[in-house]
Image (cartoon, rainbow, N blue to C red; front, side):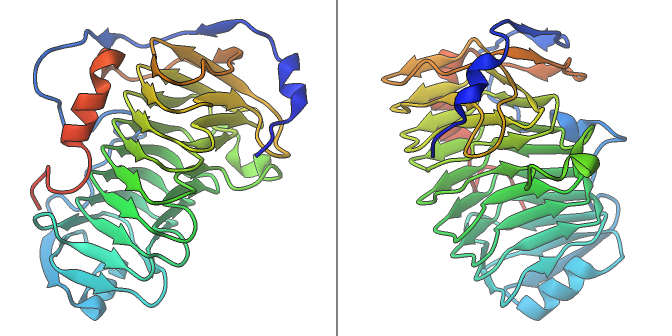
Length: 315
């Protein structure tokens, strides 16, 4: 896709105030919750609630997901959905082992709060694999997503305080959209604050993420391997901090503006480039409000390849 040429009119200065950052460490990667989902009161999902084992029963899964009861829903085997499935508040949906799979359609986290989705394979979805809208305090972690129709993980419509971490996306084009429309600023300004960290984009096409309005959006310690269109795009008043990422065989790692969307702010620092472009940045980004562990970018490829996707956390 072409970018609006007017993005060049943005200021070239790249200033951002930061929270305290934990120094890089040689210790094993932490899979603990970090980022925006720790804010707004924090995200605990179904912790303390009822545990529901649905196995591969689609009807049981749908009923458990839409229930108003605080619960941990454990999936094993393959659940085939015939439509997008609503996920209610105070839920943890987690796969058992490395084979738990959602196919056919995906999960709709709509008008919900305090939701965790972990350790699931998503395959062959006909809409979005995971759609988040009008929702807050959501953690999407350690999933493997491939061969879908539209977005893999999309966040939109005034959603806020979301962390997307340690996911692997492959054999797919549109990865992660943040903000669905240039005309939705009335709802989205001051919202759409999302952290993307330690995700593995394995030969995917675009939207890693594509951002509208959210500020600050934090993109750190991700591995971009052979991205075919572009990595990160900042548009429509957004402010995106891109730091400590590993870009390999990615000609266009990040830029401002995308399609008909106006260019916005993007600050890039301490990234590592292998056979990749240098990116386009400018403007300033609001301060990151939380502390976080930041690994040196040169080691991110090995860390993410060994830690992202299913089978790394227990269900």
